[in-house]
Length: 284
Image (cartoon, rainbow, N blue to C red; front, top):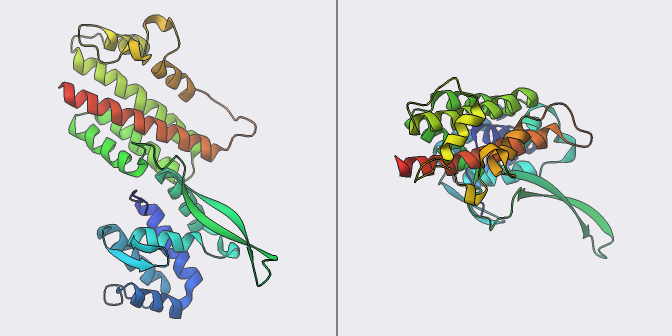
């Protein structure tokens, strides 16, 4: 079972894709099978898709029986959408579904399987996979996104929060260049504000890299040169400066998907900000 909670766009588009492929009779059968016939109704398939999405979003712990065992309703719906016919993998709903999955940290993999009595026929099977190793701790991207936005608001990081929310919105609609710009601004302003909150007398006119370097100062530094998080004057390679350099890259790169690149930027910044927010709250 996948532990992640999926975002609204992923669930909404998955419901629309499923009802598009299922038809009225199949949709009604599944609703009865899921014990949802009393909670999901509508005059047409789109109405049923909307009602089903509400259940999955508002009651995410509700579990249903599937061929893959007992699953949360949202995951069950998404798995059904993953397996729709290739001819239906087009249009706005499909594009939103794929972008939503990427934002949540998932991809769809195609696998060829031999079928038939003599196993001589090939059939393509689609499966939902995590972008990152399942056993890797701390990479629950969808949950991390919610945690980070809540923590930014809770600690008064209003401008970085605004940039991050804009980045998520631009990423959701496929505006990769705009999303990348907001991602970079979110991290840069976040680090600037941490420096100011830790040292309120800090000159706001200082360059951002100078402000970041003040986080190495004192008996209890916020960033650690011993961990190569940051170094004074860029004396040797460091994680924060390398990340900032990576986020400042501009232009297209041959062979690099804009979708994949923007998703990478969003995920690594969310995970980095979550770590530093937890450190900030423990300190303050």
